[in-house]
Amino acid sequence: MTCNRLDALRMPINGINTSNMGDKIRPTRHGSPQRVGEAIAQYATQPTGLADALFTTGQQRVLGLLFGQPQRSFTVSDIIAATGTGSGAAQREVTKLLVSGLVEAHPFAVDAGNAQGCGQVRLAPRLR
Image (cartoon, rainbow, N blue to C red; front, side, top):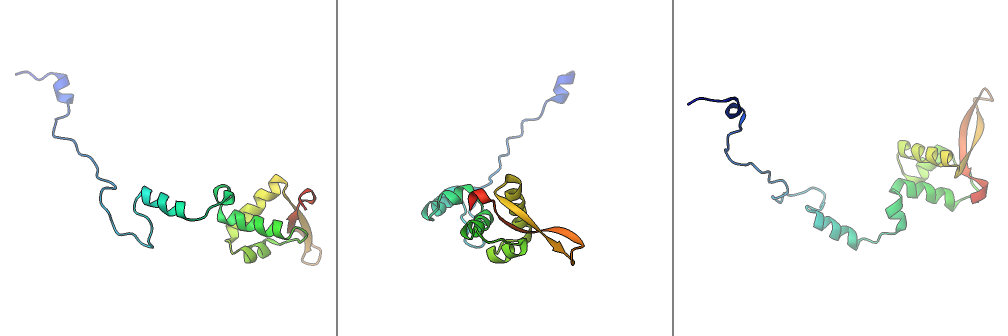
């Protein structure tokens, strides 16, 4: 019996292994849903609005603060403290709002007039 080159390259047929991911029900932490259908049912029962679909919780908090008090100026520290968002998320949202023109920055003198910094932000005049 001669062995040609194609026989050497053929895979042996030993059966097919299939994964069983998602077949077992495992206990979860924090009461999170175990299957997609359970997650859909959970979110379908919770009241959601247009804001929940369009904006993250951090964005909703920052926008709610700024639009809730349109005449007031806020420092980023004020926004972080009032909204309870993390410093990175608050800074990211303020930067997005500045770039889009929805808010404007008001610099203030830092260290007795030696440097200028972006001190406070407030809604752009067209939105107040």
